[in-house]
Length: 104
Image (cartoon, rainbow, N blue to C red; front, side):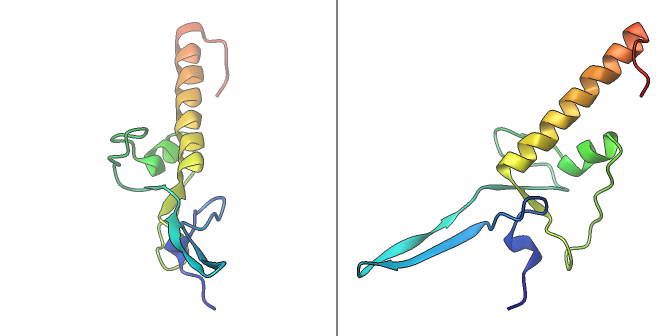
């Protein structure tokens, strides 16, 4: 079975759609994991307007865009890590600018 790139997180590979099937004769519904687009501003309240690929680029990580090979979406916990990475980078960069204490 061929894997569809946007069916899972680009980084942790969590599948966005999980089908549970039947359990004791009762059909269980499909669950969807929340995700965030890497290259578009999001309306998700936790990441409002944030473009995750730009955060990555700012810290020196280049995210290749090829929808045939790579997912353009990330699982919310991975998106949160990228957001935190950007905030941490900004914190250290501002400290460096003010104090000259770090070499980046």
